[in-house]
Length: 231
Ligand SMILES: [Zn+2]
Image 1 (cartoon, rainbow, N blue to C red):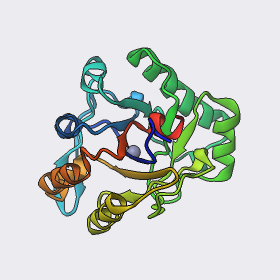
Image 2 (cartoon, rainbow, N blue to C red; image 1 turned 180 degrees about the vertical axis):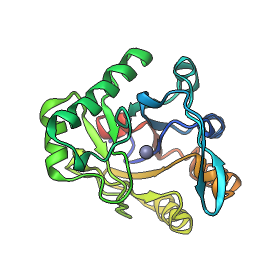
Image 3 (cartoon, protein in one colour; image 1 turned 135 degrees about the horizontal axis):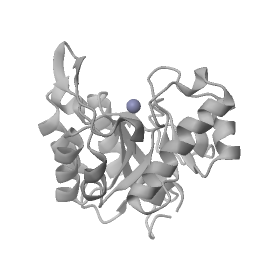
Image 4 (cartoon, rainbow, N blue to C red; image 1 turned 30 degrees about the vertical axis):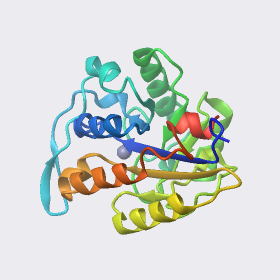
């Protein structure tokens, strides 16, 4: 149960780009809660990237702005410099995870025990998950593999999100099923993405429509990843 409710919705956004500020305004307007996964080795770095055949801003928020921007939400580890952990030795995996954990915990003033694996494609495996589980304070780590399911998962170190926001039609379809679900056991709707994708795919309005649709339901608990996965 989540605060006495069987249904919970949570969001997870990666990379800590400046578009998070606009996204958080939407989340706060609708009373939604999210977890933001950040690379502390890249604070303040600027740039653009090409996505969907257009150039979009890909600038990282500055360290000094982090506590204020994310004060209503959870900050979690995304490794120090966004390397693919499956290609690293144990010492390098631990350095990437623990340095980010230490930096983010110091900046936020709480234990940042959540994590999302960096890089696309195959960005996690059992070796990496076991190293993190056995040697770090991290308590859950999210993959990018859509489960299309609301069922709670036992392996929190390779936790699969329900859906990716760029699977937009599927995301709305799942929302309608979730809203009409009469749950007699815990059910989690978990959405992930990057806020710069709203620029690249003109999805700001569509995503706000999604937030309005899923918000303010009495039978749903709205929490950060930690609040929902760790209870
Ligand atoms: Zn990332």
